[in-house]
Image 1 (tube, rainbow, N blue to C red):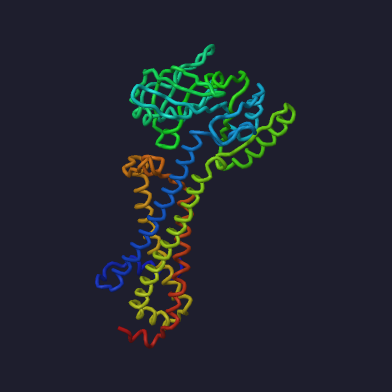
Image 2 (cartoon, rainbow, N blue to C red):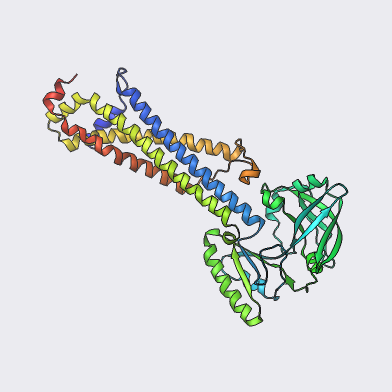
Length: 415
């Protein structure tokens, strides 16, 4: 243990002198660091959690990658895409691909005695991944598929069911057009869901994909497209490139042209909005670090002025400016660590309460989720703590140079 560290430690834990002028200032500086770190931890945890949750919702309702025919336009009336029997298995063999499923969409109208609603019917097959929608099922059951005949059960959002005054088990009339001809189907509502994602809930109805194939007069080996899910969204660009190369070779051999689009291509506005949140976080981090640093600077200056006699005595006993500066840098470090400790307790404590009890709610119509999401990431916590410690120490290096201007003769006489 060095002499400077020993002196700083004695000063830090000294409690018998209750008339210190610096005590309120030091407490304010410590509180500033604690508050700044707590705000930074909460901000990063909430923004990261919000982005992750919205990304999961977007992907769960669509997919990471969509493969459609080049003849399809940007409407929901999709062109038929030939699906060779071996194509889904070939796509599953691509590293990073977790799941592949077929889908189709077709606009239609649901009519009841009192009202009607224009919707998009999205087809699902036996390979459909229900894990996401199963968590948001409110009433009824998921549709049951029959190997021989297309299912007549549909899954509807709770919002649309409320508007049309429908409950699970009710029959509903659906109207479609093809080649300027009107087609009517009577199906049964099997269940309702609420994903809190208004754009999806107010637009889509889930129906057996074979019903859409029949309505469009397609062959059994045709569909609107394929939805591909990856293991890690951070690897999406690489997986998308490999999928594109595979489909380019397959399309040339079979005479088909495939269009590959990622979830970023299909939802540029949503992901652009999420990217803007990063700028807000950086602004909060910079402001909080400066506030914490300035609080620490003011506390250190008061400490130096109050300990002027001690500085003079140390210099008279042979200590140089570097040695005296180390004393106050050690003392400041103790105060910074104490503030960081309470900042972690407050910040992580509030994040944990929100994570388990979800007491802060959000409007799903605006934010796509019903409660403030929190993701406690150990890596971000360590980086924030190290960054706060480093920034605070760097900001007090300048004020600590004040000890070089204090001479022993004047300091010992200072009262």
